[in-house]
Length: 164
Image 1: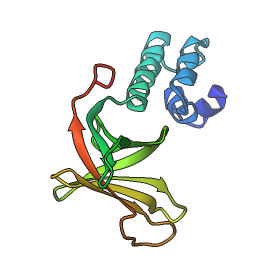
Image 2: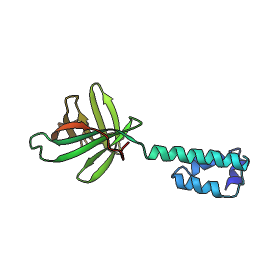
Image 3: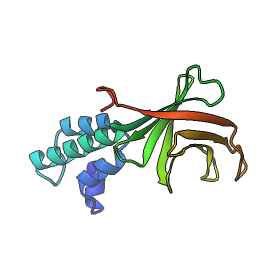
Image 4: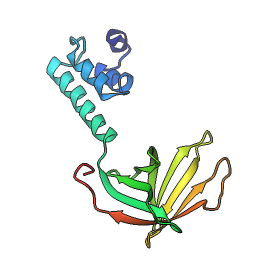
């Protein structure tokens, strides 16, 4: 496979990063293969190893902020947990043991997590926390606007050692 791309003018390291980018393991496996590349053995291995480590770091981003949220009217237990990843562009929303990957952003003073991407590129759900800790969950379904379906009260909690 590499020889075919080399003749087409592509560097084998480019092919490895594009073809094998689905996981760090496949990139690591590529390092162990005999070199059939235009790059020298050590240089090629270092490039692929660096790419694999960089991708592994992105996949397991550290948490920098955690919000624990309870129902606003019956605050008996934690209903939802919202986390912000180190990149400050992604995060997670956890509800009833289910973790949803989310896009995160600060809009004005509010923190916002959007998740459940629809076929039209919009998100089906939003979770917004105001600076005072009041929060709203929105279920858009297929609509472009919605009223909050759940109101919550959130508090930011310190990070555990495992989250850092």
